[in-house]
Length: 154
Image (spheres, rainbow, N blue to C red):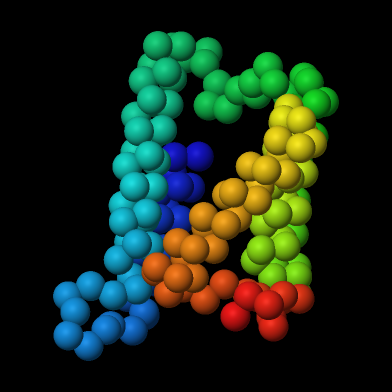
């Protein structure tokens, strides 16, 4: 996984070279993706070093890939599947539903599934969505899809 993470991060950093530069500024839209990419490289290198160290301690009989105990619990596998489906669902439905509705739906379902009460899940989802909307759309000026709320939000 560490190698995959490093390769992905290098590809992502390379792709940021295609981003346009802003006139009169020494940084532009590539800054945050590059910082994230360098962070991913660091995490990938830590995973690689830990894996090699673990392999050496295990000796010749050690395996490169060992399934964790959590794979025996169907509840945890379902949680992982929900997180993956949430990411895919955001990509597929955010343009139509909009960021606010999609984020509220995804966060509410995940928070409820992971143990929050229904009311607490809705409150945390609403607060998180509001903060993300304000930070990205108003402060960073990153356009988020309005979707069904086009006339109300913008």
